[in-house]
Length: 200
Image: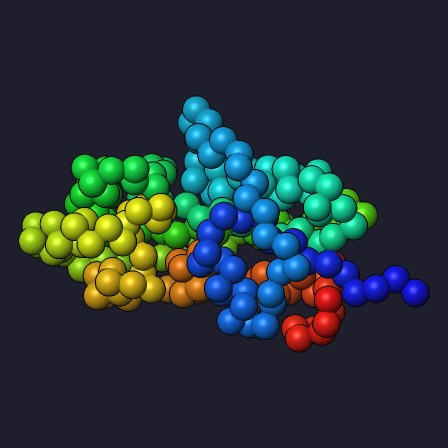
């Protein structure tokens, strides 16, 4: 009889690995997809997130280390209308993101792609609406100085210091952190991964 299905996480994000561990899903292997994440011309946020999740999943599924395994990939986009906010690479960009988000609602769009060992794929896009209160210049400066924005979509981490910026949210909190674990679990079990805690 074949052994338990192996589970590979296609992500360089420690937040996604931590969220999966929180629900008892520890990947057998974690592989950085290392793909180009530049938006295409006129690409809308939901389509961008879905495309990247699919491309990450395909890139990792083709690796020898993922042969015969179930692969999960995800992408998170912070959107103001049709504008995709970046993952800031410097303080100026982080400050610009927070200034744009101040006093406004925005969407956090999380796309998930799961690929079974036989090549079958399942996809979902989850959207959470987040409302930021108006931020003072000092608050923005202090947050930028903290460095917490580094590598975060939209330049903030709701699970960190930026928790005090969000007046409310509508939808999945874990989606804003980096992965909607409810949807991820449904996709994983739907493609044959055993119950959480099953030896791999």
